[in-house]
Every structure is written in C-alpha cells, then in structure tokens.
Length: 185
Image (cartoon, rainbow, N blue to C red):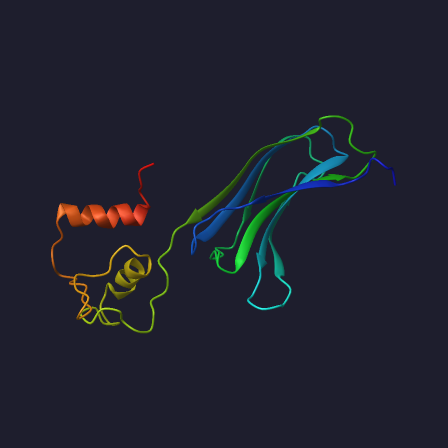
C-alpha cells in the first residue's frame, strides 16, 4: 500500500424527534476520480442501562464506488422508530482511497438528507382519564397528548378529559403552543 491510501472519515449526529419513523437517507456528492470513493454509513448506537457495551447497528450504506460526476444516492432507513432515550443516530462520511491515493479535491459532499415522519405512540394499557376508557376511539391520541404534556385534561379529581366538550380559542392556543413547542426569546 501507498502511504497516501489512508481513509479519512467524519461523523455527524442526526437529530430527529423521539418516536419519529425514519424514511429515506439521501446523499449528493461529486466524485472526479474513479480511484477514490465516498462512503456514507448511517449508524444506530444503543446503550442499554447498566454496564453492557453498546449495540452498534449499520442501518444504511451508500457509496460513489468508482463513479465519476455528480452522484445522488438514496437508501431506505426501513421505517425504524427513533428511540432517543437509549440510542444515538449518526452518519459517517468516509473517504475511501482504492488506488493511488487522493490526488487533489476530487470529492465533494454537497448535501445529506434524512426524511422522517412523526407518529403517535402506542396506546398504554391503562387509561389516565376515567371518561376516556381504553375502548374509546380517541384513547390513543388523548393519551399521547397527556404524555407529551400538552394537556392535563379538564379536571384533576376525578381525572377527566371531557372529550365531548367544546374548547375555546384560548384553550386551543394552549394546545397548539404546547404541541409545537412555541416560545418567545
């Protein structure tokens, strides 16, 4: 091997909301040298509580592999549900020389993109509000609002949500501001 044939890489943390479902990883690059390649890897690193080592899983990989020119790439992230409490998500961009080494600015990373969608968490086994039992058609969604801190219901004792009561524009403002995390500087 040539001493110039050393791979270099960079890691970046992917910030996605808790519980989001990952969609597609897209990359755009320019490669003018067939002897060097760009490789993209998306990793999920999960650290359970305790002293066990983290579980590192490759969830997507893409590369320019001897291609020349502007090279887009897309890989599915398999609808993986994000678990920020136990896991971290990173993208690694690696320069992988495969021939005589790097001969100038042959590679450019233009853009990396991750698509994701929010999803409502699974329903709990026990109802928080006495007027919204587990059989209620909106049970899962009302519980998600409560668990997210968007609402505490309409009464504390007894714990009621009042699912059939109308809301005022003021109450709606509270729901929306809390849901979207709106704040003033």
